[in-house]
Image (cartoon, rainbow, N blue to C red):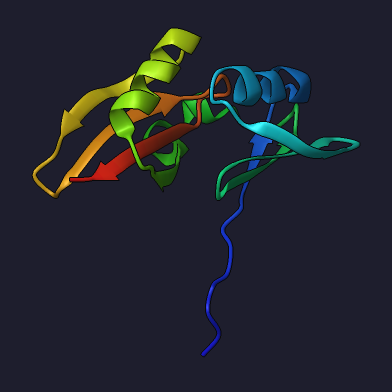
Length: 120
């Protein structure tokens, strides 16, 4: 059996420059590499490849199908405060959940939804 060694999300975005700026300035990711039509970004072990698809269906129109990831973090309260200060749009406030996670949700500039959680 082969182990998974890394996780990288690939997302279609409407405007690559705006989305790259959002992921950097609001979510705190660094730009690792760019190529025509692509931005490769990361923060810790979280990796995302943003691909410009200006004619794709916008994620904000997909309802529940716009979820794309659950990221486990070391300190959800601090990250929530960081994102609030940076102007993130929250889909769910920071809360302790009965399944043992302190978590919150964010909607990106394109409408993708991400959950961030810390094990309690």
